Length: 262
Length: 353
Image (cartoon, rainbow over the protein chains, first blue to last red):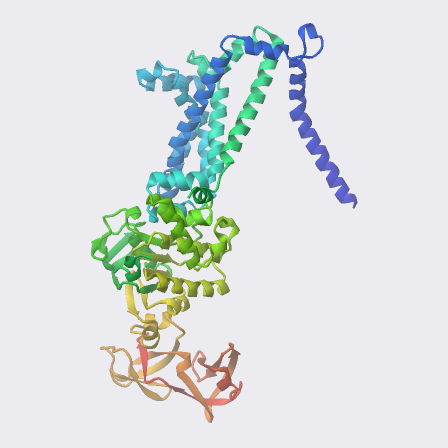
């Protein structure tokens, strides 16, 4: 009896401490960001200030677009790559693993300058070059997530079953592998997307302007506004990622749909 | 069911070879399966049976040889264009799809109309008696049910040939027998030419029209289950199919052998056999009968196996000679009794080893 009480107490204290460490800074930020002019009362003045700033919507939209394309491009490259590494190219896995970890080992400045010069001129001159950088930066994370996700399903059997039933490789990846490894693929997309939206160093080094760099610029004008802005960004990111996750996990029984319509 | 499926297709494999590194998995392997026939490839691990099946399915490449269905060359075709249904050893249902969606998959990739797909899915579910599971997902089904759905999915596309790669090995013994019989019923109902790979001889004997025993990448013998059991042509076939008792014997000529003081015909001829050569006779335990005799050998063990009883007799050899008989007949004998053994078959197979 005494032992279970001690266990309960330990767990409660541990969870409470974790929550405190996680919640207190955000609660403090929210409280601080809601302070009115000259520290009097609490209102939404600082949040309304964000939306009045020039370039808020355009920079936010741009970052979302870049994040979306970076996430999709990452999946487009890495899902077939990891699939074939698991199916028939297993001996190349250590090489791909090494290549994917390089972005963590190479200093960001070298990566930015080196990769910039390796790109065609047309891409260098376009803001879309950031998509490629974001994809490269996300590789160490997405590769590992996809690798472990594909290891947890009977990939070879599923692919062979699909192929023997007449499906092309494209259809097999789209209809069988992607849904079967949905969890890992969603995580890889979110990691890539979140990294792209929050990336500052390379964007700044290459003199491009996204929501992150805009946030840094605008924060220097208003201390309370900058706290409101970071709180807003955090809540926005959480809501966005949860929404995408919920949308991705929603599924309907297609056969029932077919039956209902005929 | 289409007429093609009802009539089945002829599968012809000729001179198929495949080497993995230094291992020759298939060595000029040839096999002809008549339309609507169910042939089992039986053999120990590594004998090449699964490689042969995977080459037919297009999941493995052959070094040489040919595979044709109704005269049409298959090896040049991609796996997705062969019109072959396959059921795998491990559970292969798509986990994100319901039973109905799994069965409909092959039809959907063939862009069949919705009405046709629904009709076919219902037919298949009826065939495997799983109508009530139409909306269930694979994780909600038992192992046996999953394999029945896998079979329905493979048959839904009306394949020219059905390939079964040890489909029962993941199931427990009781379910295995039930699904085995069901596979045979469904195969007969659909009339689909079927190649079944297994290492379980009981399974192979129970459902096949013919059984092919494989060793070292080639067929040792292919025959009906009855002939394979009663007239094995090689010592390996004899020892792999059913239980074989090895009894030391002496050749009397190239046609006769002395076993347990009885002269018997040799069922397969060994040209080099000369009179006096020491050989081993391969005898089925149920072919050994016994009678009580005061001068006979002693019964050492008596094991009740249900309908049959196995009796071990010490005839002075390093190992006991085991005889199997109905438990009713075995009531006459007890351990310690003296008996004389006789071999009730007219001929035995001999091995030089």
